Length: 149
Image (tube, rainbow, N blue to C red):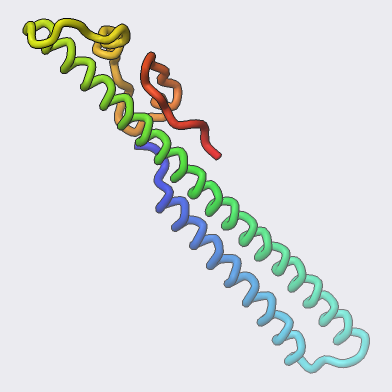
């Protein structure tokens, strides 16, 4: 079994939550800097450093959000790919089952002829269910869906 879009989205959610926590930490840091009550050069220098660190935390939080969006996009693309694999698998299995049925009926004398592609289809060895290998399958007489968006 390959990657799971739900697990990827759960990871995106966790990363997004971590980013929100970091952003909250940045706000709390600035609030604590205000609460210190220092004055003069030392107070200004401490507050400037506090604000600088809060900006660093804010940039880190933004990177968390960027990563979470990328993971969400990856999960959506993976869902599209899995749907495409499932559709290819369904179409190929239908064609192969039909060809095998026709060949069996031909051998039993129930029909007079089989299609040109039936023997090729009947001999087809399928990749494992859900495998990305289905994206490489090309069989005569089987119309397959186009590439991913």
